[in-house]
Amino acid sequence: MAATELVVERPASAEEVATLLSQGVVTRPAGGRTKLDWGAPGATPQLELSTDRLDALLEHNEGDLTAVLQAGMRLSDAQRTFSQAGQRLALDPPDPDQRATIGGIVATADSGPLRHRFGGIRDLILGVQVALPEGTLVRAGSRVIKNVAGYDLAKLMCGAFGTLGVVCEVIVRLHPDGGEKVTVVGHGEDRAVLARAARDVARRPLELEALDLRWDLDRGAVLAQAGGRAADAAADNVAAAMRGAGLETERVSDDEGLWAAQRERQRAGDPEGAVVRVSFAPGALERVLAAGPPMVARAGAGLAWMRIDPDPAAVAELRERLAPCACVLLDAPSSLRARVDPWGIGEGPELTLMERVKARFDPTGICNRGRFVGGL
Image 1 (cartoon, one colour):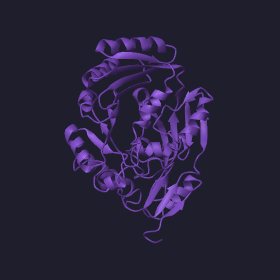
Image 2 (spheres, one colour; image 1 turned 135 degrees about the vertical axis):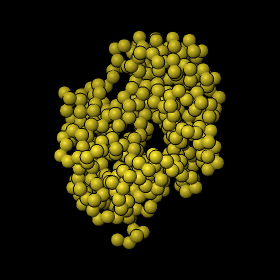
Image 3 (cartoon, helix red, strand yellow; image 1 turned 180 degrees about the horizontal axis):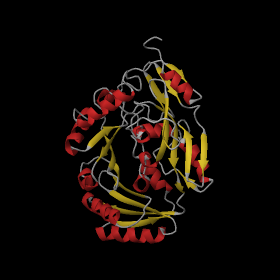
Image 4 (tube, helix red, strand yellow; image 1 turned 90 degrees about the horizontal axis):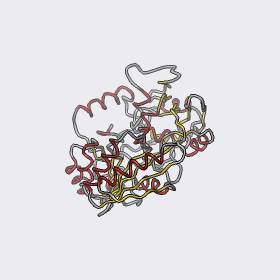
């Protein structure tokens, strides 16, 4: 196989995935191709493993609220099936074209507003089947056949960007669909007031579906979604907290458009735009809001997505201003990725640990070589 030739394979089984990996060439896993450019540019792959034929819902255990899905199944297709039973996989990452796959969501640990209540994919994954770079298949979690001693393999694959192996099957926890929903929106022009209102709402003993912030150039909002039979009472409680903090409030029953806009703001929305994801301690919310760029934030989860100028100086300035928060460049043109380390994580114990894990699972570096932190 020539070094510059890219061969695309579409295996129909996990066994075929493992066999293809055993060739030992630099391999790029691919699902719906919605986040194929995330991470560092990395080495030029020789083999692309598409999961589009691994697209089945293998089991839906309605009584146990669990499901087994192949990695290439689209999240939107899975949700349609679950909804017929009044259930859902409580994940809602941005997916305007409905192409995001389960495997891609696991690999990138992408998430949406529902993370406030249900957590991310790490909190919903129960088990996994993975084809390892050496050409073997392993399972971990529920229905264990073979495990890798010392590692929580299912969670380890979440956010690893396909650098440790290729996920073939995922076992997930489901939840009831949540019933009718209502969103309270608190508007304001003072970032400190918005942050205080979000903190006040987050501290209340309410099981909110989502709690987000939005900041534009000179105005922002706090959005809190309640669901279920207690939705109206919870909305009243939230509205009182927001008004007490000094925000103007409105109540929106037909709220899907509001949350679709929140998810949309997690992406650049322009091939030449750039988005940085910031991870921070929830207590630093006001400081993150004060950074300036237009953004959305998960108030209780400590995550924000900021739209910045696609310029290395803008990335460096934001990282310096928000240090020690982790600022990861997500959406960005290739010209910016070539000049900036998307991860922004230097030498230290975290990188050393990740290097050891990579050496354990992929010592020859064939899976997404160079795409992860520190060139892993």
